[in-house]
Length: 293
Image (cartoon, rainbow, N blue to C red; front, side, top):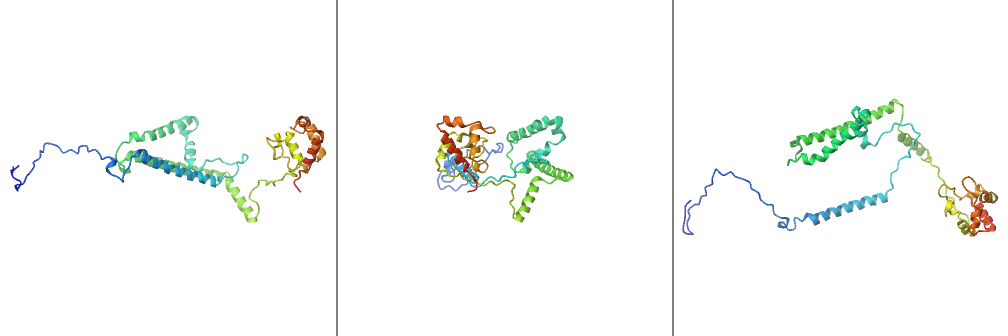
């Protein structure tokens, strides 16, 4: 190296390194987020609070949808139907897997606990076993191979389960019950007929709701079994329209002697403060409860 004593020296200064010292990357501490004002923020609480707010908005949106839209209920279950049971499509691979020889019969414990326990255990341990920094899937042969193998197994088992189900239905000449009901509903809809076999009951109004006997009905503790709206509660029959099948004399007989599981109620009514005349008025009012007015 040349040495110069003045500021006007034009001599070139050359620094010679030592080739015996290996070049190292060293460790450089990354700058704090505060070094980038307006471009970064603290994870706790700023970023985490934003994530929580987004989660709350999504949750409220889901709740609004569940409240505004009724649940799409399917057909009621028919226990007498002779059909081949099959789970929903997202469980078909498990349904088919449990039919394999080593997962059923004498090996049911191995199939339900052993194999699935190993699979879920490997999934839980994956972050600790696969600690490589490489993100490209083709540079991670073990993890990628297991992933593709699992996907292929799910697709294969799902397709096999559905294919076997179709063959089973064809061999036994069965049509899925939901398909039958859809076809029947389509035929009825084309003919302008109702598409449900449920009995549509007409609402029967209470006759002379302002009659004083209505208060007697409540005072006699009839509401304990027949409810305040007279529609019945706890298995007791509705009294709306009772006058279609019972006249005043028949109702008085039931009050005095009982019927079926209903015990005699005259003494109970008298104990509640009603008189014989009140019971007679109550029976007459009940006899007026007819569906056709």
